[in-house]
Length: 631
Image (cartoon, rainbow, N blue to C red; front, side, top):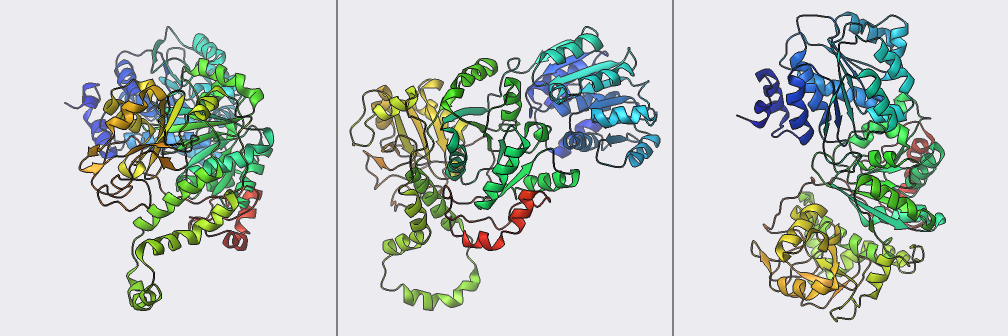
């Protein structure tokens, strides 16, 4: 018996689950489904975004619907058009082996007449946004007076968007004896009011801690001056070449401005805010889902209901006013058990807000420095080396090789490698070589600890925090969570003894207290996994990027382009470890801060939405070429 079968689901739904590739129920599904399949009851379920809530209410709803009746029996309210359509598609997938069950989506921005026609043909389940639902009710186009089940999905999101009165009016038109299922990530006062007014002794389940953040998300903050927010944003992107992110701004104006600036500087970026038409929103979201846009700049309202897999980073360009909003922002990454990172760019005057958020989400933030130019150069150099290594050979070049070999005949292998990477690296280096430190004051305790560590002298530090380089990364199927677990288990230390874990393509960095440095260096002396040397060295750049020192490099594996006779390449060999997040597509190189060069991905930017950012991007072809060349 499968775990889904043990929950009490019938065969037709189990067959659909098998087709979708689901193997094990999530925590919220395991708790909610047996309750909802039992006697009719009201339920309040608190769980983070991305934990499988749609299936938690979708499977029981489909099982309880009478397919022989054309009467509307279930109503699902969701905050946005995007989420409404997504829920509808998932409900249709869940019910693929059910005969005569019809699921209809009603939302703004589409023909109300067409939607009314679909409902008239018979819709046992309606998925709706509150605004369009209220409009159709006022016109007499929909009848929900006999529904058996009402589901409020992302209830806190709907109330944050100002739908409180609409929801009260909609619920007032439903029968009192119906079952109400409320699913929410947080429990603010307005949600509690809805539960008290319209629900009867609801059962309550909580996945994780109430109002907490997801445990799969690492929270980081970077302190800069106000004028350095945008340069800091670009450096964070440059440090993560395969970034696939949502960047949050407070206002529509800032959202548009940041997106335009990123596009101008050659990033694959797009804007999502309330001034876009529905068609423009659809185009931007389509490009983002296809990963043609790697950096989606959005307002909180416009981003409500975004449910895209494998978002690697959420970047808070500005902190929101409400702490609950931060929980929703960070919930866009680290979904379905995968890991993610939520970054916050703040000024020193905003530091007190970090403590308030920590108290609310029950998780600690890691304070980090904005990477220096040289750190970015190193990361991008290794990224280039791996990109060259993994490039598929075009056999058409074969006929040109004799002449090319003749050109290179007097250059030895090592010199040739230097020249190949220098074609791209020199321009990058020339810009970043003299860029300034963006970190505001560098007086934070964490910064003092790292700077107090003598990590660049070849000596083993005796106090403070120590930064290490390790020659494994994403190529070895690690993310920050699984690498942290590997190090903790290997070193037999506590979970909190390993921190500031940064996983790159073929190498990574991590920190520990200096007290355990001797143990780390001794443990990883001649350490092998599957026949490959795993090398750990003290980093000479405590910020997280620079060169390494203090260990023999000739026999270690490593990240990037060093020649190794015994260790194997930075991501090669059979050395594989399970990690929770999938491989990322795309990637691009570094930018200058206020100019310089960058390569656009071949897919181009996805922000062709008709907004100003889209127009600028589509008209910047020559500029994009002029900026091309970086990794």
